[in-house]
Length: 261
Image 1 (cartoon, rainbow, N blue to C red):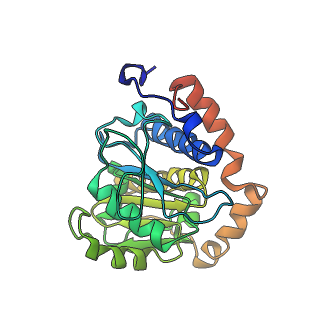
Image 2: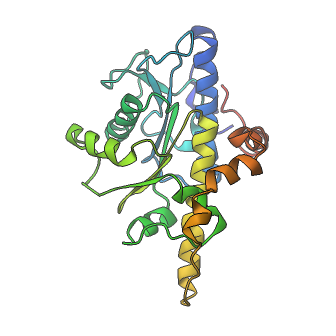
């Protein structure tokens, strides 16, 4: 297994069942990002809130150990930090300072955000650099456009004074396009944030390919976009991301097992 050479002690018996499940789901998401080719060496990040005993907001979240390739990450290697970025476990691993700024801002402002997922895919960055942003030219795009915000580029996200602007641009939305930078999604669960990112990245890939054709593009009417959320509920039979997450885990078990260690 990719993680076997790292010799990381298993934390399953030293944390709550709820935290362990959050660790397993988040480690799975990291490996799925690698599996789909969305990783940028070690330079993007996904975080998950650590649930309290009764599901309450704890202010603690899990994030990747900085320097690990995403296919190496396991449930036990994830680092638990508080809202100030202080490590809450005995671990030799550090966290990405830019990752902490972005994710701590969203988790603090959005208590409904159980997971925050951020990537630097070529397709996503290409569209983020376009003045028009996401165009209504595919069936997939209507679901993104129904809940999309934009945040202007301010350099590498290292400064706390950027947090209020980033949070304001995200608002209550699911999707945030970071101009000249990449894509961000939020979800109540890891599964929701991951499915949202799959859709976001697919929309950007379709757009770049459609534009490469060189011909005029056909836009979808605003009144169709306005009903996108209702259509999404109907097409998933109300299950949302829970419809696809078990299948994604089965695929991961075949291709990159060992995330639940």
